[in-house]
Each structure stands twice: as structure tokens, then as C-alpha cells.
Image (tube, rainbow, N blue to C red; front, side):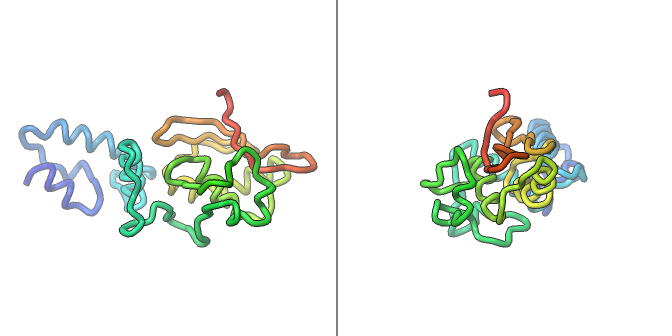
Length: 191
């Protein structure tokens, strides 16, 4: 069995199942690299969510967006409310967003900022303190943000760092925290 067949026939990409045959070293190196970069829980296999992140990341590198008739570009592992698409969908929380163009569709498959806006819009109110912001992000945003392909490196108060196919960024996600009128924002630190 060739390495290609043994890898592609497995329900999870597992480099230990690849058979070493002539000419497959480059393929095995590629499989190892992909596994290293997309195996979030480091179990040596890609789960369906990890594989989905791999495919989405690869597709975005080639400007390909998933066909909504065959797959949902907006599915997450724990989504319970529909995706936000326009300003009208933000409802009463729209005034709590600063620096977001809510006049256009928010497409979480294209940017971390859009993913954050979609997820934050589900909250009834903006966290008012740094402690609330950190807790809110970890409990209400992080898992779906990561399911959308944005690996959270750390969260501290109203700031977080993430890595995706575009690079690693540090973001201040609440403006005016610990003040009278906090709002969601997307301020890239050190830019």
C-alpha cells in the first residue's frame, strides 16, 4: 500500500500509518508538517474539526471559499445561534461595536475580526471589567473562535493573542474596559 493510499484511507491523518515506499518522502514530510500544525490536542491524529481547519486554511490560501450548498463555511463545533451577516442582525448590540463595518456581511471564514464580531454579537452586554472580559472571552468566544481556525495563544484581561493562516496577532478587544461605556473593538497591538 502506498503512503498516499494509507494516509487517505484513514479517517484521521496519522503519519504512523504511512508506509515508506520510494518517492514518498516528500509526501510524508508534508503529512508530518500538516499534522504538527493542525493537530491541536497533539494526539497524533486530526479529528474532523482539526481536518476542517486544515482544509479551510488551505482553501483560503488559494482564494477558495466553501460552497454553501455542500458545506457551511460558518459551522463551528458548538454553534447554537445563526451566523451574524449584516448590521440588522446585530440588533441592540450594534452600538457596542467600534471599528467594525457592520454595513457589510461579516464573514468569519475570511478574518478573525469578522469571527470575533459574529461571536461577540451573541452576548447581551459588553464585559465591564478586565476580569469580566477575560472570563467572557474564555467562556463565550474562545472555543468557537478556535473552531473557526484562529488558535488562541493567551487571554489577559481585555487583550488576547491568536495565530491563524495570516500570522500571530495581539488584539485589544474591549475599548474602555473598567470605564463607564465599554465597547467591542479590534485594536491590533504593536501594528
